[in-house]
Length: 231
Ligand SMILES: *Cc1c(COP(=O)(O)O)cnc(C)c1O
Image 1 (cartoon, rainbow, N blue to C red):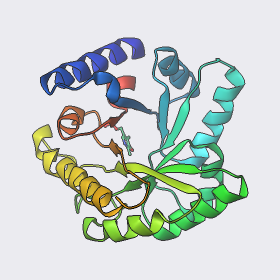
Image 2: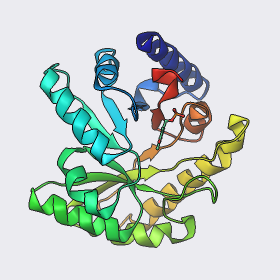
Image 3: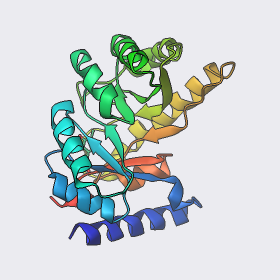
Image 4: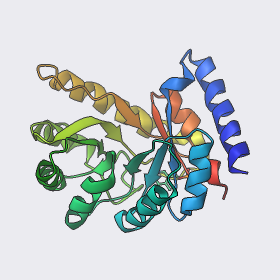
């Protein structure tokens, strides 16, 4: 079931990539595994997906430990895709390879502090709220560039890119402006940061209902839950 789903998703990604002349291997698939079991996560990993996205730190801590104990031998990258509260930053820094939901300077500063304590450079994405109604979290587009410039100064944080959640729409094409906005912010930030060594390369956008549109608009990371695990 999961294996078939992954084959189908990869076919759909290949098809859309062929239309825009893009190598499908440049699009990283994150299996969004909230409310799924460690056993299901293991199945996904055995099918060749190496990136797991969790929403809640507490839930992730349990699955992280359970998965470790299985000793599968497969290397996995753990992503935090849900909102992070400042008081959970320590736990998050302890297990996540990429924290995709950094949405304030205050949270970034706490992540930086916790990462410094364990000599880690924490990879992060900055979440931008491209649509007023989609979610409660994320930087406002108009303030995002200034805040990202501040976050970029933190020594134990490495900003790899941007993340957004598009609103739920009836046809996928309606999500396009939100994806486009994220890509425009990326270009602006990269222009502003050009004198430093940092470059934001990752655009994490697109979910089960709209990932094809997101890829057309420049997503190189898609977060898929239902497309992989079923409804
Ligand atoms: C649940 C979730 C996803 C995956 O959603 P689907 O529509 O099931 O693909 C992606 N990103 C975030 C932040 C999520 O919470």
